[in-house]
Amino acid sequence: MSKDDLSWSIPVMRAGYAGRGIVYLVVAGVSLYTLWARGHAAGTSEALSSIRDSAWGIPVLVLIALGMLAYAVWRVVDATYDLEDYGTDAKGIIARTGMLVTGTLHLTIGILAVIALFKLSDGGSGSGLSAAVSGVMALPAGRALVALAGLVTIGAGLYYLHKAWKRKYREVLASNHFTRNWDPMLRAGVAAQGVIVTLIGGFITYAGLTADPQKAGGVGEAFSWLHEQAYGQILVIAVCIGLLGFALFCFVNATHRIIPKVTGNDIESLAKQFGDQAKRGAKTATG
Image 1 (cartoon, rainbow, N blue to C red):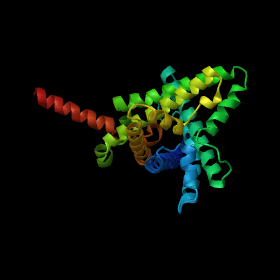
Image 2 (image 1 turned 45 degrees about the vertical axis):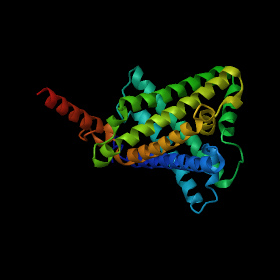
Image 3 (image 1 turned 90 degrees about the horizontal axis):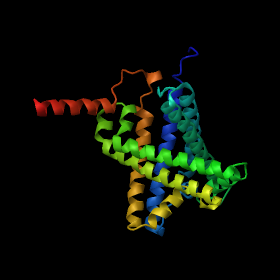
Image 4 (image 1 turned 90 degrees about the vertical axis):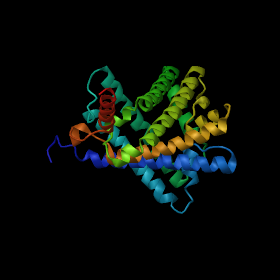
């Protein structure tokens, strides 16, 4: 294997996306159950802790921890070597910086899985994020850093929503029978992730502006905020179902993601498949 051969990164990528898929499957599934049984949806920490004593709890938590580590490594390698060919212009640098941010966030989820695995904490769903925000606020210009991190997170959430609206995610998925037929669910999943990430970014920004780390919150707080709105329970159920779609999206990425600088550019993407179909349809209609 030459020093330029990065084929080893593909198994890491697959493990990372698979672990990410398990996280969202657990969070969405447990949230739907707790919403039905207790009237509220679970956050990430609560969902991970709730499966600890189930029959498959320990193996699942181990898989999540390993998967999140793999995903964090994948994001660092992807950003460093620009495996998805984002480039070095301003847009590319922003995209690659976003990879490092998401890698860090998912490494945090892996740590939460380890905490749940060994029952190291009984904190609530937002306690870990609040503690992290509190630590940053103690630094010079900490409030500004927290607010900036919140704005970056909002930007990431809006980017997910943009990807869902414009179907940009299709550009990195190989076209096949499965991805074509399940595309509506994939789109709903990306949109649901956009909603959750945008809300979390809003909470972090508000915490920075008010100098109150307790205002920062994760998935659980996002569900609570949605639940307080008009038709809140319906909104939470819809987002949970959407996150099941995002879990599917992660699993699909694990098996069908195109990595240009490793797998080459000769694989037909879902975007190209649908684009060609649209062109043929337009040509037929005008012909």
